[in-house]
Structure formats: C-alpha cells, structure tokens
Image (cartoon, rainbow, N blue to C red; front, side, top):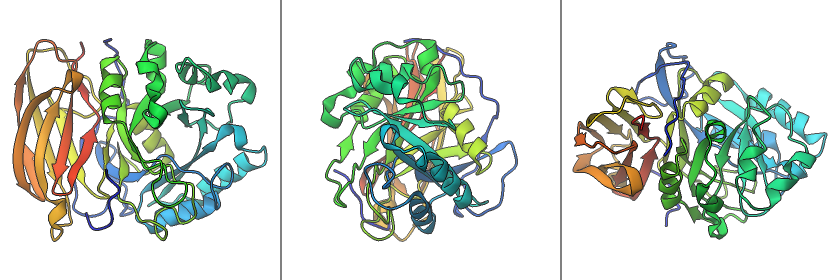
Length: 367
C-alpha cells in the first residue's frame, strides 16, 4: 500500500446474464480499452459519499473530478434522499453523465433513511418519494428493503451496519424478493465528515451474520465522505469497492452489482481472482461434499513491503475458517480443497503486511 491507511439459510438462485472470466492484468483497470464481452476486469471505486446536495460539502461534479484524479474507475454520490431538492437530482444525474468517459463512470445514487439503518439505492432514475420512505426512519430495519420492492431496477446496499450497533436487527425477515434487492454490505465505512475518519465503522462480523441469515451480498469498503476533495487533498484513502465487469459502463457496473461480483479491499489496486468449482465470486454452484477453490492475488506495488500478501483464508458459515495458507509475495496462488456436506458459502479473506486487507463475495453452494 503506497499511501495512508485508515484501519483500525435459505437457497436462492441467481441468473447471471454475463459469465465472466476474470483477467488480473498488471496495468490499471481504467486503461480505457474495453475488454471482450466474456472477460471481467476489476474496476475500483467508492459507493458511498456525500456533497452539499445533502449534508456534505462541494458539488457532485467536484466529487467525480476528484475521484477520477485519484485514479478511481467509478464513484457514486449518495446524498440523503430526504434532503435532495427537486432541482438537485436532475443536476446530480447530469453531473454523473458529464463525468462519464471510457475510463471513468460517475454514478448518481442516494441514501435512504434518517436514523441508524441506512440503505444506498442504485440504478433508479427517480427519487423514491418521502411518502414512501417515511417508514424507513423507524424499526423494523427490513422496512428499508421493502421500500425498494415496487421499483424493478432498484438495488440496495446495507450501509454501516455497526454504526450505533444497530446491525439491521440481525438481518431478520429474509425472503427471496428482499434478497434479490440487496446486493452489498459495507464491511468498512470510513464515515468521514470532518476529514479525520471520526465515524469509522467496521462491520466484519455483520457480513457473516448477514450471509448466515440467508442474504446474498458482496462486501464493500467505502468512504462515506462529507468533504471537498474526497480523495486527493484532505486525506487520501486507499480502500475501494471493486466490481468485476466486462465493460466500464453504467450497465456493466450495475450488472456486476446484481451478480454480487466483487470484493472490498483496503488497498487501492489489490487484484483478486477467487473461484470455487470453477465459478467466480458471486456465483452459485451445485451442492457437493468436496469443493476445490482457485485463488490468485496480486498487487502491482512490488516495491512496497506492506503490500506483500501474507495470509489467505477460505471462510465459511459462521465465520469458520475452512482452510488457510501462510504465503509471502506480491503475487500468490492457492488451490485448496475443502470437504463439507453442510457449508452454504465460501469467501476469501486476504491479509497483507499492512494487516487484514480484503474480503470477497462468496461462492454459494446451493444449499
């Protein structure tokens, strides 16, 4: 890592339109060259940030420009829906479109909720009316998910679960319909509204609880920044949400979200390829009693000792470590085999010289 670090049961079948073969190139993902339609590239960005449109500072256009200058491939502004004036939503969408090029995607989205349990909404062109979201200000937390049900394209992210230790009421209320709406959970939220990470929130155990409750989600690492110069001036950060997509477009990124195809990393360019039974992270496989995984992890910053990968862990139900390996290097591979007649999912956890660094979406076993 070359910059500062801020550290401290129910089966459901996904139909994925695009099948990806992940390519872990040493060159940056945002090279501006579109990969073949059957190839997935890791795109690095941030899926939670605020501007003066709600309770932050600066403009959406400024946020997109800052993220692009910092080398991100995509960036989402997620101002609070209840604070977005009627003139500001069209302006935010226009700023996102204007910032989008062949090497960067600006995403206009927003955050539902006012108290503890918040959900970011993606791929919806309209603001969900306050009359429909008022219930989301109160318990039970599942109300946040139910707000999305009438909107076919809308998908959501569980935000900062352990902020005030609310944790979405333990993720009770799973149904296939609700599950289809929620694609991600923030395992790390910097929560910066004054430039010093004051509200930093880790939710690693929440990720396991959510998976154990039956939800099909991928992990994300986000800034939740509220200040100008989101990445390049006040406090550069390296954590990223990574989406594996065939093309760097709105459609490609939203498809990756729906496929739960991605991972969270505290390093700005850590590349991970993780498969179980030949299926990429975010996939489901047929139930079996023996599973073969394939892991490849690399970091191009070979002159940075802290970026050296030191440990790989295959994690399953309840957070149990099904297999692990001590490694050393900036590019490592692993092919563990695991026997289990009960496991419902496996995800990869990566440690580097800087500490616990990355978590992938699971591969589900179909149980």
